[in-house]
Length: 112
Image 1 (cartoon, rainbow, N blue to C red):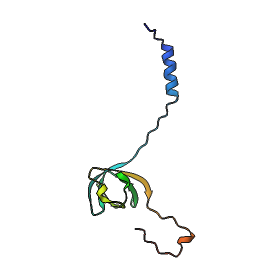
Image 2 (image 1 turned 30 degrees about the horizontal axis):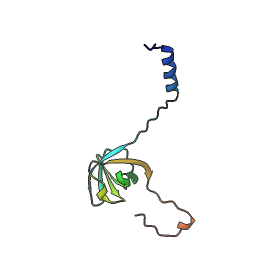
Image 3 (image 1 turned 60 degrees about the vertical axis):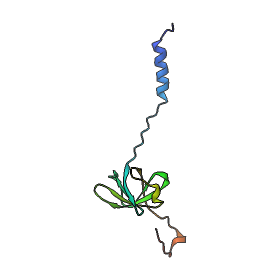
Image 4 (image 1 turned 30 degrees about the vertical axis):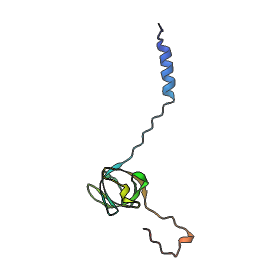
C-alpha cells in the first residue's frame, strides 16, 4: 500500500498554486431580437454608447445608432443574412472614427 505524506501533498499543491494567475475578462453582450433591412434590434447592451462599433458572429460589424430604453438599433455593415435572432452581440468599446492627416484635408468624405 502507498503511504500518503501530507507534507509532500502540500508541497505539490503550493507549487501548482504559485503559477496560478487569476484572469477574469468581463464583456457586455447582448442578444439579437430581430433583423431586417440591414438593421438589427439588440437587447441587453445597457451601457452601449451612441456610434459604438458592435461585433456580431461571423465577423459582421455594426454601429449603434438608435439607443432606446430596452434595446439598441444597430445598422449592419455586412450581410444581414449572416445575423440571426438569438445571436450574441459583443461591445467593442470603440466609437466609429476616421483617421485624418494632411492627405485628407480639403476632401469630401462620405463615412458610410
